[in-house]
Each structure stands twice: as C-alpha cells, then as structure tokens.
Length: 202
Image 1 (cartoon, rainbow, N blue to C red):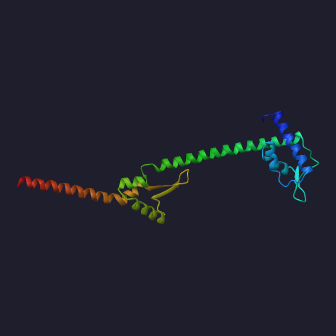
Image 2 (image 1 turned 60 degrees about the vertical axis):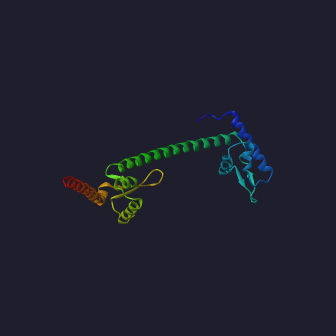
Image 3 (image 1 turned 180 degrees about the horizontal axis):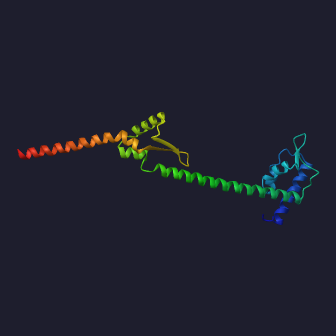
C-alpha cells in the first residue's frame, strides 16, 4: 500500500479539526457540506459515524465524541479502510470481468453449436425453404406449444432470444413440397419439349 503523503494527511487532519470545532460549537443537523467545503471525499461522514467519532444528540444535531479527538490516528485508520475497500472492489471487479468472459465464451460455444449444419436460424430457414416470415413465426409458436425438441431457444450475451430449427425436421415438413414443385417444373419442361418436337415433325 502506498504511503500517504504528508500534504494529504495534513489536509485530512485540518478537515477533522474544523469539523470537530463546528460540531462542538454549533448545531448542525447536516454535515454533508463539510467534505465539499474542504475538498475531501464524501466517504468521511459515514466513516466517522460508523466509528462513533460523531453522533447525534437528543435534538438531532451532530456532535463530536469528546473521548476521540481529531488526530493523525483517525486519518491513518480512514486511509487504511479506504485502501482495503478499494482492493476488495478491484478483486470483485476482476471476478466480475472473468465471469463475464466465461459467460461470453459459453454463449460463443453455444452459438457455434447452433450454427452447425443441423441447426438453422429463422432468417436462414425463410431463405432456404422459401417461406414467409408469418409461416416461420407460426411454426415457432406451434413448436413452443408442443415443447418440440426440434426448436431450441437460447439467450445471447445481450439477453436476446436465439432461435434455431432442427434442419432434419424442416426437411421433413418442407422438402416434400419442394420436391413436388421440382417434379412439376421438370414435367412442364419435358411436356414443352415434346410439343416442340411434334410441331417440328408435322
């Protein structure tokens, strides 16, 4: 821990002495302005109250505990507590960042798993099978109602739904129609060629 500078220590000590004088000499029901007046951190009042260095009298006014005069000892104790809290916050922040990285990696793995050829997104399904937005959304509602495993819904890191269809399932309900369309088109083409051939003969 970095050793506090003499100027900072003196600055804090002057603040404490002024606050001690004010609370012992006048009635103050609000002490929030004192840290601002002395340009010190707003954490000071809470610290002093928690350590019972200042307290409220029967009239709701703040008073300085006469048994604990303003001193460098109080300043050192305050600096130590602040340093410990900062260190703890740093650890917590690092843990939070690490957890976010873990969550992101997990979601990334899930996303890659969903992107395999056997799973397909809503937009990809519309394009591949030539279906409208309404048709695909109706299918989503149907599969949700049935709790059908052919539909998988997850969350990305932003909390948005990731919806994937099982490719084999979509093939089973849409490929037959596609095959029929292909057969019809091929039949039309063949019929057209036969007609052209007959016209050529006659």
